[in-house]
Length: 85
Image (cartoon, rainbow, N blue to C red; front, top):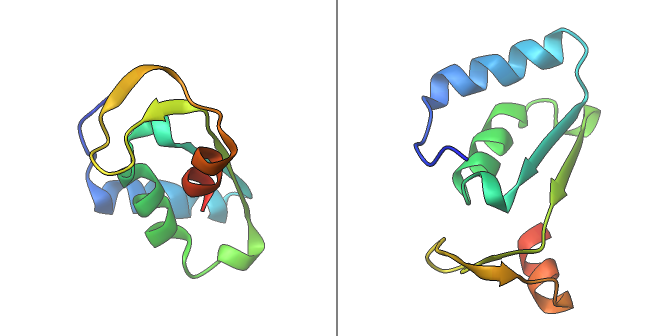
């Protein structure tokens, strides 16, 4: 996984262009950032959010305060709720 934060403007343009070309399902996950990918996606789709579906994956053992990847997985219900919200 890449750990650098891409150009927000470039990513917004890519996401909007995808929607303009018929893409209505967008995928993200805490493992892709964490945190920044979700923010970038949210910013990009704000004007058409009600016309798309956003899916996510969870279960990674990532500290929600620091973004540090910890060993193993974490599929505890309380962790899943925090991640998907």
